[in-house]
Length: 280
Ligand code: C5P
Image 1: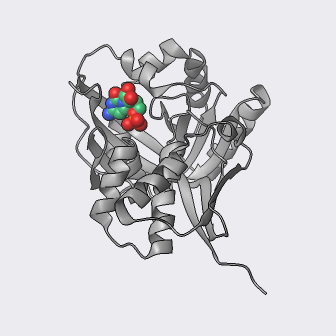
Image 2: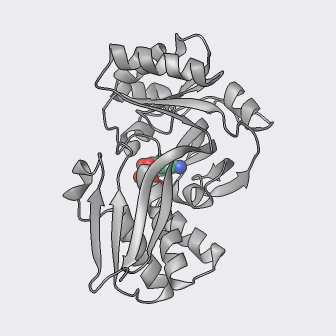
């Protein structure tokens, strides 16, 4: 006898290839122009029918989340049920493979994967309603629901897909310091340094900036070391922080350059999290 089918949804890590902060808003958020992209690695969300509703976190980065009652996954499930009606009893498992509070959208990707999985389970097909729920859950959740390279405006929820950089080799490095997004935005100096460059993803990434890098380095100076270490490797085309940090990424000329940079960083800093992957 086989058990109930499990719905599996990937929750890929998000990168901000560029992140321009343009203005403080009256509602406490900031007006952004950002280039979202996704990598071929992330958390995983599993949903299967069960006698009773349940939620479990497993995987190498489960630790910090297990004690936390108010996870974005359970909030996403509650918001889905509030909009579309009570859920059948399902057991939800989050396989946590991404470091938490690290600027690569793990929690946002988990929430988006929850919405996708529950939509599949219940047969809901309302992209606009799902996008609305996503925006209520967090600024990065709509981008994670879309799951492809896109410019984000507003809080990040107004999305415009762009082409470019598909399959580009990328190295992600996190020094193991959790950084609170709110604290980093609060330290932004208020200077508008201008809009995103115009062009495809490669142009925007190479000519763009991350305006949160300086305030994040004030919160966690080790971010400067990560960026320096990434940038010093031949074959690294671009080294930049993602989101509000502390994860930084390097776009590499080819897979060999990525492997060499990763090996050197692992040898020098065995405690840092290092992921070799590609842009999706
Ligand atoms: O939307 P989300 O809950 O993910 O945002 C977390 C925090 O990041 C907000 O409370 C706010 O302090 C900051 N933020 C911001 N402007 C944005 C997105 C996030 O100030 N566009």
